[in-house]
Length: 72
Image (cartoon, rainbow, N blue to C red; front, side, top):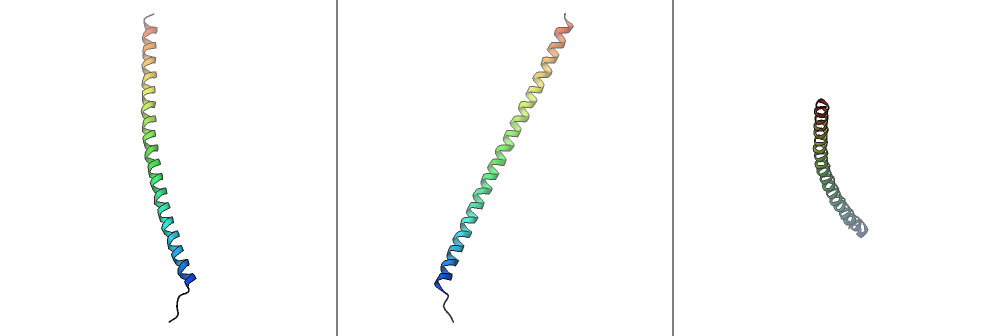
């Protein structure tokens, strides 16, 4: 049986390190994407709520304007 060259063993170790680093980076990236999606969802909810509030305020202002015009 032949001995495996030392350079191959070093290469294999380095390859394993790179694969592990890639897995860690991928997990970190996926976590960041998930956090950004959660933040985006929260911001969408906030915008929708503010939009509804503005619509209600405009509707109320229009009603007040109509009432004022009727009493003139």
